[in-house]
Image (tube, rainbow, N blue to C red; front, side):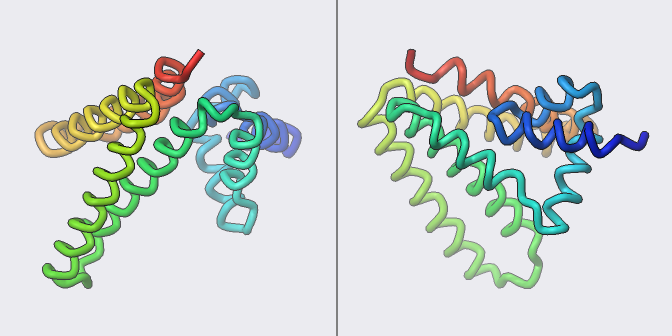
Length: 167
């Protein structure tokens, strides 16, 4: 279904203002996959909504939420890097192992720092660890439902943030 430029603009505005993409899509009456496609095409043409979205979240978050935001961003980059390392067949095994070891070391350090500075952030880090482990389990054991699981986890992300954000 084709969406009007007004709907697309409103989708972007709501997302940049801090709604998740799923929430913004619901607000404008479009499906999540349509919204994701619109956002991807915008990025491909040089309009990266995530930059504005992240800036808005950082500027409106108090210092208590900064650790949770940083953990979320780190986790997103961590997962993307793991996926890239798995998929790029040009990387030699030793280089892949070295990169994975370095990545795991960074992950360990950032979660340890979060635990020391904020108990809620520590719980959040554990929740992210469990979510990652569950995702890997489902991907390996039940590949036919993996896409549905990952779509659900992406929509559940804001709920995790709400559960572990300081009041």
